[in-house]
Amino acid sequence: MILYDSTAAPNPRLVRVFMAEKGISIPLVQVDLANGENRREPFLSKNPMGGLPVLELDDGTWIAETVAICRYLELDHAATPLMGTSAREQALVEMWRRRAESEIASTIGNAFRHTHPFFANRIKQCEAYGRLCLEQAPDKLAWLDGVLQKTPFIAGETYTIADITALVWIDFGRAVNIRIGENLSHLRRWHETVSARPSASA
Image (tube, rainbow, N blue to C red; front, side, top):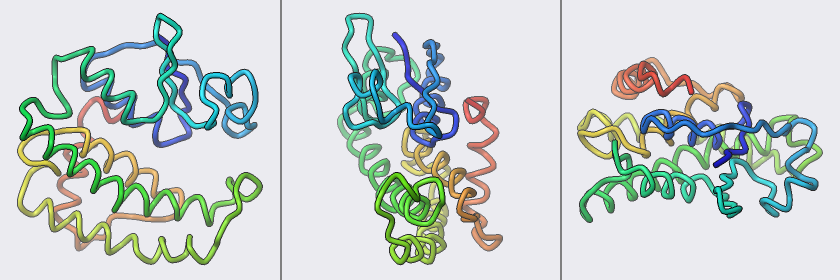
């Protein structure tokens, strides 16, 4: 297998952290996002959407989309489950992963896409929307602080893909000056804990 990767982007990091937690080693091929390598051939033959990461299987199958890749790796490497085991656990982890994505990742991602110069000539930016996302980000982080007041990890007692999602995107928020407020003690405790895991440096 090969993972088409970029150390500059959050979604590839999410998969690398996921792999590191499970002890999976896959050769990485760096794709140059800054020079638009992902938006032209031969990369577009692997993922016509132009996004990263992309996992190439030994039989030539290409799997794009972050969670799809993680789900494949979860099933292919059952040790150290990160997406739950029982039906109940899997449903709860997916619920919290989706909330981390919709409330945290989406807000930070759209703040970056619509205000950062990197995307100025890549998409049609809406600066007003990006500014709105920047204004909403502290409230989203405060919401997560409230969640973590009750549990050590986002989906409960166990570290899961929900934590990886939030960690990666909160860290990426630094690119648009989004930070965890000093008053968010539960979120800060959680962030220190998950950042100390060896996988966080993947």
